[in-house]
Image 1 (cartoon, rainbow, N blue to C red):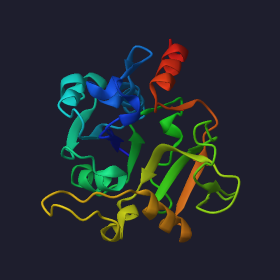
Image 2: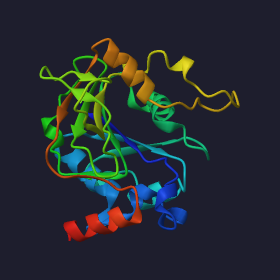
Image 3: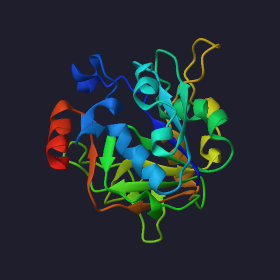
Length: 231
């Protein structure tokens, strides 16, 4: 696993007014942008090539991060246009830059102490997802992890998807049925979750339960709390 994708294209609507002038992954916690924590961890495990999806205030990313050389990385930017393509469309849009091999994908607006070196180099099937205990703002969870390490859409107790996973490009098979109709010149826009659920029904998604620190930085209050913890 030498390539990684960071989702950084969201509008950050719940983070306003902070995101009126700064993309959410570039907001600072613990003295550095959220996305810089990911870049440091990726470089530490030997990832050398990172694709960053961008849309909202996209021009700020190369200004802030450059070509990645300060971390020993090579960064490429996959611009999605003025309207983000959601997780599935964003991944599909980035695939030509990522290449055919499995890749690690991370949400740009989370923070975690997860050691990325513990993740598999490639998934057993279509994807390997990191799960965490349900946070207060998402008590219903997302998926169930069984004793064999397989993930299921049904069942209890559910855990929350951490926004970290190792993917094979095959996870996107069948995306055409989900794509939003619109300008044919634009890349398609669709969510990844329905494809993950379909793959789970085939027994094609596994995962791990991370019991350490994890924050979905979805509100200014959570950003402030994280900043205080990291400092």
